[in-house]
Amino acid sequence: MYNSKFASEMEKLVSLCLKNNQIDPELYVKYNVKKGLRDLSGRGVLVGLTNISEICAWKNVNGEEVPCEGKLYYRGIDVEDIINGFSEDRRFGFEEVSYLLLFGELPTYEQLETFNSILAENRDLPKNFVRDIIMKAPSPDMMNILSRGVLTLYYYDQRASDNSIENVLRQSLELIAKFPLIACYGYQTYRHRYHGDSLFINRPEKELSTAENILHLLRKDSNFTKLEARVLDISLMLHADHGGGNNSTFTTRVVTSTGSDTYSVISAALSSLKGPKHGGANIKVVEMFEDMKKKVKDWKDDEEIIKYLNDLLEGKAYDGAGLIYGMGHAVYSKSDPRAEIFRSFVKSLAEEKGYSEEFELYAKVEKLAPEVIRSRRKMFKGVCANVDFYSGFVYSMLGLPKELYTPLFAIARISGWCAHRIEELIGGGKIIRPSYKSIAPKQEYIPIDKRG
Image 1 (cartoon, one colour):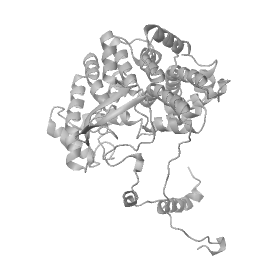
Image 2 (cartoon, one colour; image 1 turned 120 degrees about the vertical axis):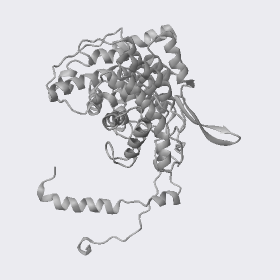
Image 3 (cartoon, one colour; image 1 turned 45 degrees about the vertical axis):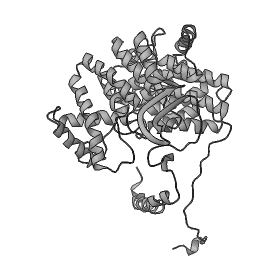
Image 4 (tube, one colour; image 1 turned 135 degrees about the horizontal axis):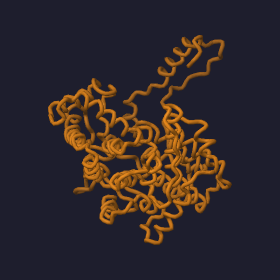
């Protein structure tokens, strides 16, 4: 808070900022500027090449690009096929997906066993780290705890600034293993300090997967069902990477291109993901549905649901932002493959947990919302449910706190960030520097004693 004697001056400074930083939206069209590095149809400006993952939302038909059902590929393999393979074998897959993203190939049994052993050995924090770093300065924001924890790990690493591929790979594996601990311990400390909950610290178990360890770390009794762990594992796999153009991954590549160290790069990516336009949407979806369930009396009445959705778009419901959260994506128009894949697993968990009626409400909104949006908004591309539409619902059914929704995204995406960092180090070379066109009119310098 500013000192009251500066309040009026601050108001003037704010007005000055607003006056001199406005840009006419028409100028973006005049100069053919791709605002947000995207065109009107949502397609991103091509700024790089990658082997790691691919998003497909368009196909060529008679020489013309038209929207198609969305597809996501990890190293050229359809993610749907990857998850179906794990499901048939009843195996956990996040570690295997991490291996695929980092090394470009699916591991053999022996390679996977070695990889899992490396992660298990690194599921630990430096001596007194929990006491001195996490417990002594708890924060209500778990993303800030993650970022601070990552930056602090720099000081425990004798080769922190060594950007050789061997060293960056070692750092990457350590961060993939340690992220769940920093997030979970940070949350437990926060609950103890700010809400008076009993503090308990469960040690990770080497034989458990990442998904199992998250539930083990967060639950005092460490109990969870196989379906709970499996659905969380699916969520981690679906969030592990999403092309090179999403904001946090692009941030990873931009900061990597400067020659910065791994810890600074990942902290920058975390700061990007923390933004509600990127990593916080699933919280908004859950809160929106909580409001909807209070306002809509009959969850099976399409007309009543449509009225609520119209109220959302008019800013008359939930947070007044005029948005239906979880609907629409920057790239996908017909379908988000992650939401399509996730839906059946979400339904199974809802049945086990006794949330079938809530799932049916989600399904109705998924069906009705696109048409409501199209009827009221000028659309340059189609609109569909994105992965955030269901992920928050899953986390709520698992009893996971909202404070950890975005950190769970980070726990998954760290694998993709590290893969893109390594690819940028190997094949980049140039610092990433886009261009901005100045539209400021030229003016003469005025001496200070002649300024009015």
